[in-house]
Image (cartoon, rainbow, N blue to C red; front, side, top):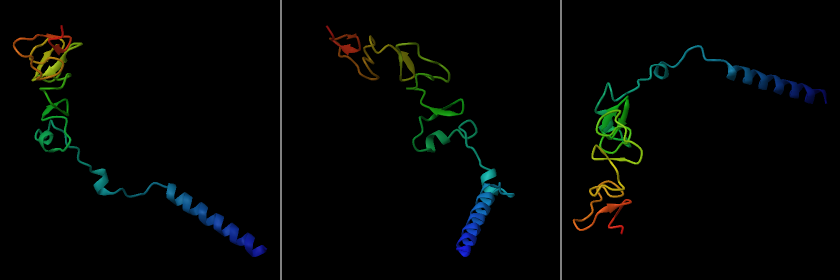
Length: 123
């Protein structure tokens, strides 16, 4: 019975030592982790073309965007489309009434119909 208590006490001391050693900060940091290089499109403009899943080929405020479709950067950086308008080919348009972009970008109504409420020939 005494040896069982001693074994249990020894196991508890080892567990405590492992916990304390795991919680201490390492004295030397890994050189590669501390010198991480951050690539931004302002320093490297081609990064927007080369990164898979990029939002677009243009760079605005250190972010890749598409100036022809982004409503917050329509045609140029910082140009926001007003309420109800969308960005099509770098211009803010109203998709409810625009015959070249009726309901969505590049949805052109034919010559005999007009765009109303985002649909060609609604009436």
